[in-house]
Amino acid sequence: MFKRLCIIGLGLIGGSIARAARQQGLCAEIVALGHAQNLPHLQRAVELGVIDRFYTDAAEALHNADCVIIATPVGAMRSVFQQIAPYWQADCIYSDAGSTKGSVVAAAEAVFTQVPANFVPAHPIAGAERSGVEASQADLFKQRRLILTPLAHTDPLAIQALTQFWTQLGSSVSLMTVEHHDTVLAATSHLPHILAFALVGLLGHKDEQREIFKYAAGGFKDFSRIASSDPTMWLDICLANKHELLPLIRQYQAELSTIEQLLAEDQSEQLFANFTYARNARQRFLDQLDD
Amino acid sequence: MFKRLCIIGLGLIGGSIARAARQQGLCAEIVALGHAQNLPHLQRAVELGVIDRFYTDAAEALHNADCVIIATPVGAMRSVFQQIAPYWQADCIYSDAGSTKGSVVAAAEAVFTQVPANFVPAHPIAGAERSGVEASQADLFKQRRLILTPLAHTDPLAIQALTQFWTQLGSSVSLMTVEHHDTVLAATSHLPHILAFALVGLLGHKDEQREIFKYAAGGFKDFSRIASSDPTMWLDICLANKHELLPLIRQYQAELSTIEQLLAEDQSEQLFANFTYARNARQRFLDQLDD
Image (cartoon, rainbow over all chains, first blue to last red; front, top):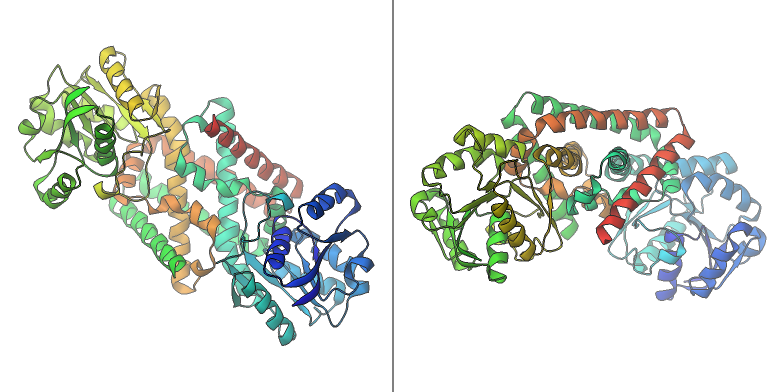
């Protein structure tokens, strides 16, 4: 399907895209563009068979590439666009895998003035708490959602090619606006990460004074899993989507204050109604997962 | 080990105690005491082989029992103590499985003035989001912690017998004070449940207006799992331990406000330090789990 796929940012997501594309036979050649300081890491990716070869020179890496996917933390996208802009080709399809889309579009606009028509912003809703190319896996995107957020002038053929590509990696592809994406993901992903980091931070300090983790069980383990996510990546995401995230944090504080007050006043009926509403809402979420 | 084990409150926990005790051959006979309105439920437990028989009359259920375990929601413990007080026997061991211990001790004091020496407050740190005897399983307590919170005058032989009993169910038994238990569990269990109920409640209302659950992934699924817990049980726990829980909710609000402010002010370094601290703290928790 592609002659040469070039991955920029070969971590968990970039590595998994490479592995999955190879497994599905979608690319004749898979290369990576990386920094000289990441040499051992890039060499390891070749040894693992994740990529065919790597380059530290953008001109060489992008030469003859017909698909380029940027899978760096979102905070690095602007400098990546700057790096690859001189070699931008009209007959190549460009995309990314960032968890925020408004910031990626803004980074492209800062470099290109107008976002190139052959760049399709994308977000695979998949991940794991482990990071790095060694944690990458070919089935990471199977039965997951992939969101494309094309702009009005984005090339329909590029959208179509990426839809086919991700569908063959096993994902279910949805299209939505950049704004809708960032609103939805702030609620379902970014806010939960903030809440988990805050809880594990609070409890970590308590644990240092008096052991408490020893008596934490499965519920805490699952609840806190996302607090093991990569801090660099999540710092980037939170900063990139802060305009959506900040109002949500405040709404959450209000929700928590309501529960706090109901509890302080022993308002059992209303508390029971709140807990029951939440339990039923989660069931609605689970029912959709099974679809 | 016991001639007749009587379970009061045959839900997930009570049913799992019965199944595990039977599997380990620890009781010649396992019976339950229940309410007449739960007849179909109790009959089902007999059909499933979870218990040998059940009674709705306390005198009959407790006759010849040498171990009684109360596994009702903690809010029902006082009425259970009232119900069984007339048949309390000196040569029987009594315990419970409540998630809060101060409230259980207070309920016992309200009925008996002094907590009987042969009552040992206990808390198996195990559970599942499903509830009811049909969800019970013999291995629920394997490789889990069981906390006993005996009082100064609790009979050492009763403590020893329950330690042996729970060890044979596969649990690792710890002893601590009632107060320490309630402080630790408020942080590692009760607060996370409140946070999960609050998040899923907030997002549930958003989902009703504009679909968002459709795009939620594995991170949200794990984070929100405990919001599927039984609302009745958790209302009881939160009310029973509110004096520990309320200050913690306020500390959490302060932690969240700190993150909100750092984010609003783009204080990247401090945010990165907070996320990294949390990630490392969770690793410390995971390392203890593996021990």
